[in-house]
Length: 118
Length: 109
Image 1 (spheres, rainbow over the protein chains, first blue to last red):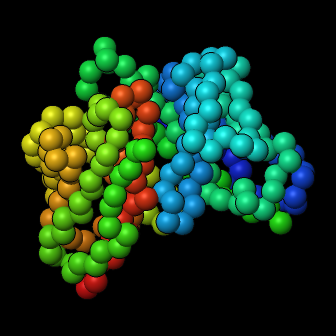
Image 2: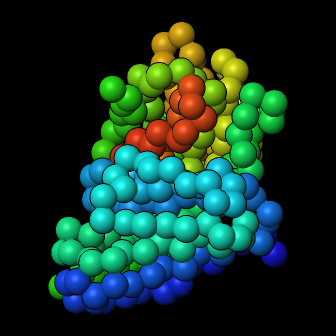
């Protein structure tokens, strides 16, 4: 079954304690991204990756790191979490969308990680 | 700046029809997506429009007018399970998805 798997689903942590949220996809997608979703603000992109070893900042990258050592995995790292990073996080993957792709290529989302930083 | 506007919340009655509008101002346009998101769950793909006109898929249809920067999602024969948020997203000139804040749809019996 095609899927994007995030772990953990729920996490409560304390300020400053490093954490990693894992994301893995089994569809051989080149493009992966991380979003945070806060009430009234919609989905905001944190980082994205067009392929292995290629990552770029999204709209709200401060306080986050990512890595893309393998095509299937795209972990999100919070080196020193703060309360303003309390949010619902989603990982997503899709095929690379380029002029030559044609048609639509939908994004597949993981189940979400609800993070609370106290 | 880039901007996508949707109503924050809408209410409709079971069995009725509802239209959720989305207007956008983005740097370039390479398609518009609609996603459905139930509370606390991941968004799931509903439709994609890149050319003007109406795309129909069962009870759901999506319309696009590129000249007006406008789209709508039409839901017919509403069911209680359609209670969810509906997200509009535009693929810009850099092939990045720009998301609206979503429209929360409440269905009443």
